[in-house]
Image (tube, rainbow, N blue to C red; front, side):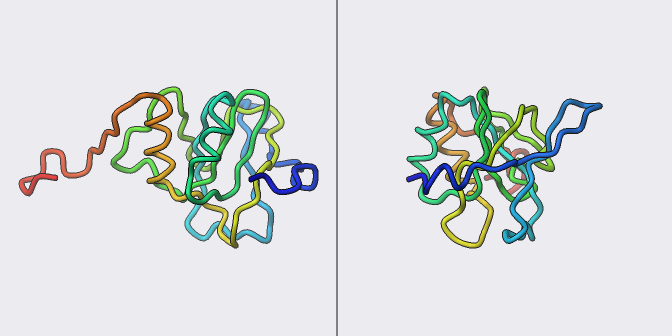
Length: 139
């Protein structure tokens, strides 16, 4: 459930005018000790995804995309399904993203595995795990 949406709406990004990318900026009270990447989905999936995850960290949105903050490297050994977008360093192709969801605790992160599985389910894509592919031990 969104907590007092009006109080949570704030400036959430800094735009790099050369590349037209915006870096999502976390509130200073939420340390990103594991680095900071973001996973975006088209806005039409936003509320459905938000409501199905067991835990949400910071969530940003603009008119077209919703972005979940995940630990850096959350794309390691997985292929995020289209039309989702994985953004290293939380640099996103967004216009005026705003923080719309504050985390349940002191961590800014949404757990990436449940987010990945829900993104796959919402897009009708089978999860693709590449860890262990070609390994002599299998996976």
